[in-house]
Image 1 (tube, helix red, strand yellow):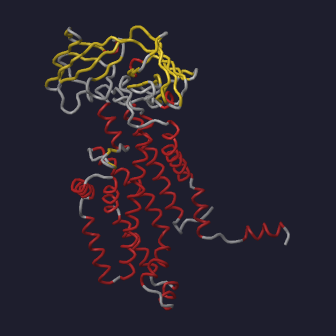
Image 2 (cartoon, helix red, strand yellow):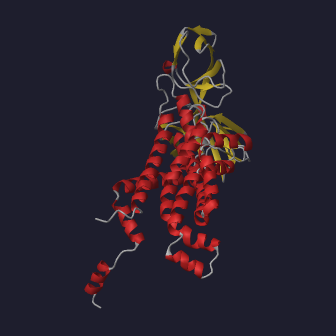
Image 3 (cartoon, helix red, strand yellow):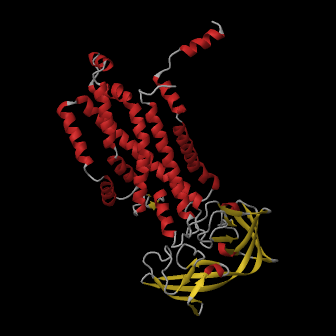
Length: 458
């Protein structure tokens, strides 16, 4: 057969239903846009934290809440070096061989602000009292005493309302330190595979050296000045917001996907059994669904988490257990329209059991509609988990709290302040969540159109 004839036969060959659905999906511009955003977010959530090599919970307390693009020496809040021991600092420092610290000696001034009836009642700095103070005019950095966070450069005035997000846990007294830089000194440290070999200050050998991050003016590792840039800025505790946003995305997407999978399994089995058996069994099973529909889902989830804990496994079960009802109705409707068709009758005549007919013949034919609803369920679950995190029921794993997008948005609202200070703490997690939900909803709508047999390819 000639090549031209083969190409003509390929063009005339009818397309399968799957190929037609894929073609309709490719022609849906909104679905492709949603898929593009979804892929970008999933890849960013998986890759960005691994590239940055930063922990979402590592605080840089001396800088506090700083806007996008802020930089500082790439060291930790506290850095320790002792001859013969393993160095304790940031990875870029401990992996170097020769380190040069430029350290600033500091002057510390203690401040104390008292709030009564949500208004500032007194302002004290050192031994002096003030009627008002603007921290943007002060030298150095502010660090809250006994709390793992910095203090933004804002103003206070007696008799005025206290800025939101500063007095945590019903505290009425805010104590912090103003750290002012003075003269510099140079510390030279030699490492071998992370083990401290020598520490020198001028011509003097030291046995140990420790320095707070707030005192490090510059750090040079193997001839290169190392700085850390926070592209999304930092939160009130000085933690890198970009890393926290993408780690939070991991939590939100994991909960959305796994809880949806749980609801998919329950809904598929329940709906298929009800639709195939029919009669009284069907009426009873769907009556149970109707009763469950009358219950307030989110309160049921809250009740389950309060009673059994908010571990991530419990969250998967709780959210999945309340999302399967619509899935069951969809599958039941599909099975009712399929169970009397020829291929099902042929399976019965061949001696196939009910279980075989349901799982090998009926359920596979419902996967088109099921895949559409599954795609649309994921954003619903993400929204529900975010709401739970927003009201304080954050997901936990091994008793460690995991901050999802909902928890980050709540932190952003708390840090927003009366005049919109620290707005980036709210904007970036909100934007990440909006982009992901937009992508999921647009792609789900595109899938629904693809599996609609009434549509045709133009």
